[in-house]
Image (cartoon, rainbow, N blue to C red; front, side, top):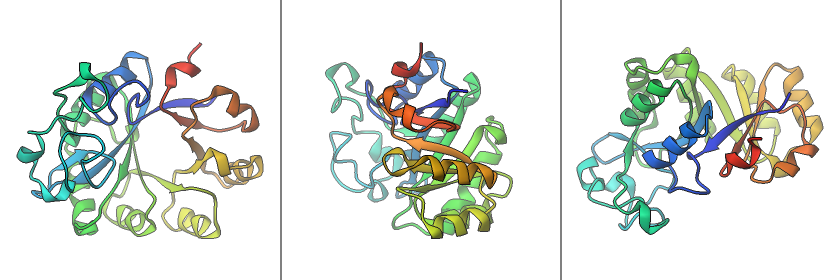
Length: 236
């Protein structure tokens, strides 16, 4: 069976990543899951943004956690990508949860924390998810940081957890078991069939990123899902 296609930061190949217009594009394509990144602002609002700075994906400069939400909303998060997206605001997690619930779309939420207290962010995230309209089974929490994953396991019981890694390592195996992970998310370039088979045999789903050429998949069968910036290339 073909793997499920997950929109990476929405449809990042054609739209400004992690914005409402990018998520909506994934929904319009009929995707069942999208991957996004969240992190806290200076005033502890979780917003959808990949980098810890806004330099690359907005007309502003500086760190996300150095601005309040009101201050971030003054910047343009679309015009950097193409003129037609000028004026696209930063997207909050709350807005995203409401949009996802409306269209019954699952979210892989990559948690990125730098200067904030991770335990507090994890607790806040749990509270926000519990009170959102999106069903718990429609959410996977992930991070490259093993410390963050351990705190998500502690503070977000009941939510699916996905261990993120460039390549499968011994310490990833240890963490997968320690936090009773749902899935392991790996860079497809460094993932072999034997890795996929061993993970599946151990009871974990295997999701690979970021696959933008469908022909690359012939080397990796039996994947549960792939993340793509260009999901339309996989839709026949």
